[in-house]
Length: 416
Image (cartoon, rainbow, N blue to C red):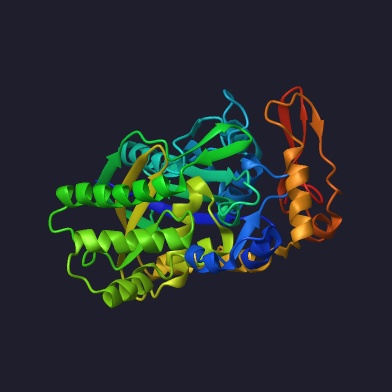
């Protein structure tokens, strides 16, 4: 049987961020709750960025690193999102075009709240594993842009970003444990997007559902994997991270249930040891929905001590709800490969928004309504950001909409 997993992974979390403490102060929120969030910064999309441009910008460095033959071996493209731009036309059609992929390619979009990226990843792994051809590849991208809910405690955690992963039988980043997948799903109205402009839900119910799904999916995993133990089987953990404080609470609840008798100090130490690396990038980006679990995985590989082969337990959750607990194996080569993508450097290089600039961006972004037939962007609206950051055509942005068709351009020059 083929060994299948992730050959390459990359993040694109935008060009700008706002400090969470500054946002709390501007909104008049109780700053004592910042410690519960465990957030430092959150990424913010520009007015001319959307889920398509984020997806392309995340995947482009991976695709550009391939030879022509390797690029043509990508026979499947899936984009997981809850930030779709059309009820029928898939984001994947635009992404396929701007990445210059072969026309001999399956492509589609998945939606299951924040679980959609994992649904796409598991589909890709199954296709690659079943392929009769050596070297078959699939490209999986999770891409979401939040519609912030201003003046609420949800707003500081709502980010924007995309994660791109190349899935193949050369899993130098992470190898899947075949058949080691625990599932837990049921219908619940915890969070939703009732229309393209709003996010709604019950925050407390979402937290309780997340915790129940973590326990339930791991229990199902343990029923399929002999001897599986929530602590002893995994050197590290990477979990869907709406905000790091939620992960900490869920980890504590899971240990109390699955490893009864664990002391509070031992729970704290376990969180630091096995999840401390995973939350570093989410603390700087915020919730990027379908891609957040993969941002946590990349953060784990980038920041943990990986001096030997290590097993990572991965927990994915999507409101509504669907969840999965699975495991991957990483090595020192995994860390070298991920660090070469420069994710940390890109996060550190983002432009720091003032609160006034942040609010101006929110206003500009809201001007393009879902279903608009024609629209043109002023790409020079925020020159203090775009002029300096997009020189040389480094990033794809949305230029306008013509008869419902989205048109993109490589800012600063030709595609490079």
